[in-house]
Image (cartoon, rainbow, N blue to C red):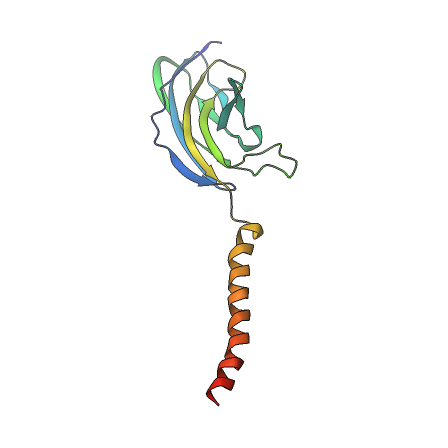
Length: 156
């Protein structure tokens, strides 16, 4: 059985995401196949490390696409969701803040389409991001609590 697939180039606008967000990708391809079959299609972020494409595997999503038999090329549309899973404490297995490309592919084949620099990922706000503003608020409240009694004494 021969499966012929033609992906169209992606033409996406760069978009902002936060670590932990779920990304929905809707894509399509033209295909012909001699018998009813199905294929697994996956999508996810990538970046380059020393010029080599590095897939962020912990973030990839996949779906099974049913392909009815056809000898004339027809278009098959599908949707894949994937989560921008945060990197672990030791820095492996997930995504960090940065700019990433998006790849849609049939694993184990040369069928893929990708586009660089379309996922602009920012870190999720954590407790460390809130400590600064909370500290400033606490200092201001402390100062007000110290000044108020002094002001009362001055008026009496």
